[in-house]
Image 1 (cartoon, rainbow, N blue to C red):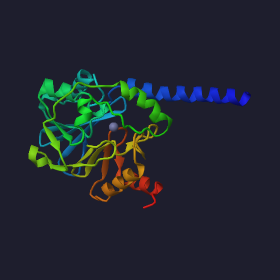
Image 2: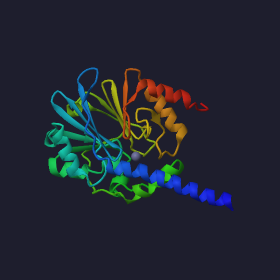
Image 3: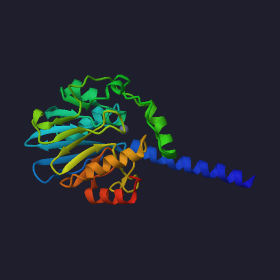
Image 4: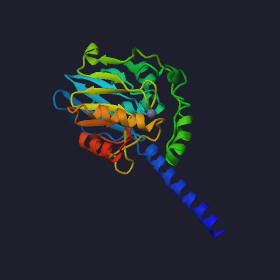
Length: 267
Ligand SMILES: [Zn+2]
């Protein structure tokens, strides 16, 4: 009996602990950071809202946005961009690493208000039609199960993408140096954006909650083995020095190598 009561009490403590984390994600707000220079021409600005990253890449005075944060934060994000000296009306394109609500949440807002064109991966069309709802989240562990409940309540306004990438897309087509490549797994149309010695990976991997610069598997992943193989494949691009995930980070290439070593697969 006493054992059972202990179990109930410890479950309650764990639940509160997790709810605390989620609350921090929601209320910490945007944290503007200084721009990071890549090896050659790009400057990267990372904003964080409710533990979801939004990136602005500047190249030769042109601006590109990668992911748009959680729904209904368009105005807040707009003013935060202005605060760090970025005029949203000067942003040409928004690339969505995938169409989950914490990445595509304000795509409609930025397209409608500033005419920013949107690029997504082929395979995300159904999710966009469903306003970000995803029935195949595959939560891993109790935190995933908890976050899944809040995820299900988040929806965004439907938007029409301007470019839908089928396999890969050379960013020189829109005036930037870099490459977009599909990497299905977390979602059917997930993609990464490679620019110089930096890569933006969406939810392919994430930073740990308490140690954001240390890699961890994402809490929603249906096939971990496939995920690890994709991480390994991307890590083979040795010119990439910094990984920018959708949550936490940035992650150095060295930390990614350590992550791969400690997560050995059967293959
Ligand atoms: Zn996601």
